[in-house]
Amino acid sequence: MTLATPENGMSPLRRAAEAAEEATGLRAEIIRGVLMMSPALRGKHAGIINELYDQLRPALPEHLRPFQVASLPLPYDRDDYATPDLLVCDAGFGDSDDWLADPGDVELVLEVVSKGNSTKDTRDMVSWYADAGVPAYLLVDPRHGTWTLHTVPREGAYQGTLHGRYGEDVDLSALGVKIATAGFARYT
Image (cartoon, rainbow, N blue to C red; front, side, top):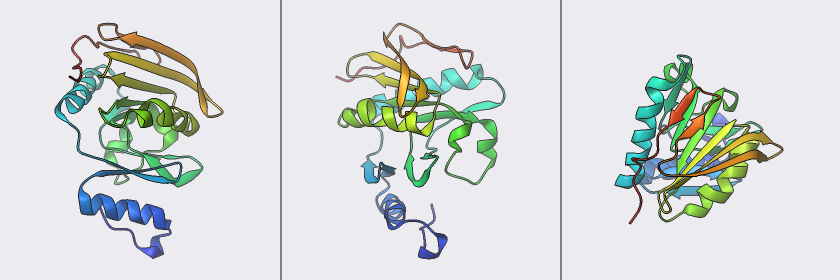
């Protein structure tokens, strides 16, 4: 990652986020104007993300691809950005030098609830992703062995919400994919 310079037009907060990420190795995000830092993923958290990726990659239509460690901005505020655990967007993103995916090209974001920062994923990010216009937000919660699928974003809120437990497949019919959850790890 290149350190931002004042002449590139980034806000001071955005420059601070990039500098903090480079200096610490932590993942930086700016959510509703607040700089948030996340530690490296723990084994079970990372394992679920890998399992999701492994299921999605071969099942998605050719024009879509899952990406880890990719970010997307709010459409109306490019300094406000989130880095979900996994996002599904236009495959062409993988050929670009951009680190921000176009929110209009993102079909799905996935977050695995962190052991120590669950409020961010379960409350704050639901409205953030809806504001960004992401058609579907899948939240996997290893604390309880559950998942929640939010769909149909409108005016900062998802209109559809479906809850399930590990062992029940997540039907992503808009993408033509079903995700098996029986093998997902739970936190101890």
